[in-house]
Length: 119
Image 1 (cartoon, rainbow, N blue to C red):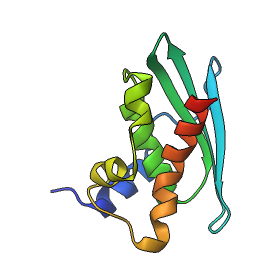
Image 2 (spheres, rainbow, N blue to C red):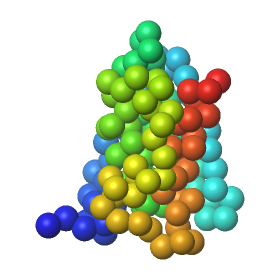
Image 3 (cartoon, one colour):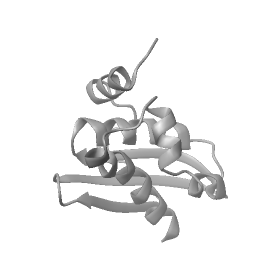
Image 4 (cartoon, rainbow, N blue to C red):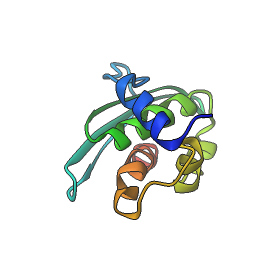
């Protein structure tokens, strides 16, 4: 059985989709000044579908794990469905809710993705 900690460590040690997306059509930067997380979410939208998603980050393990899970899930989603993703989704994907003081770390990639799609 996987646990919250196992998932965070796996995605931190072996992040999916980490690195720049050269042909991104949408991009946004996000930061968490309380802990120093900095992230860029880059997306390529074809029509109304997320064709590709990547991230670049200088961030904590939880933020990187969340970005890894998020970018994996985004591929193939419609833009409206991507915009519906929220904290509840990432907590399910992480198989647990982070401590209250760390929730912003987990949610930062989703907030950043939504800003990218809103631009």
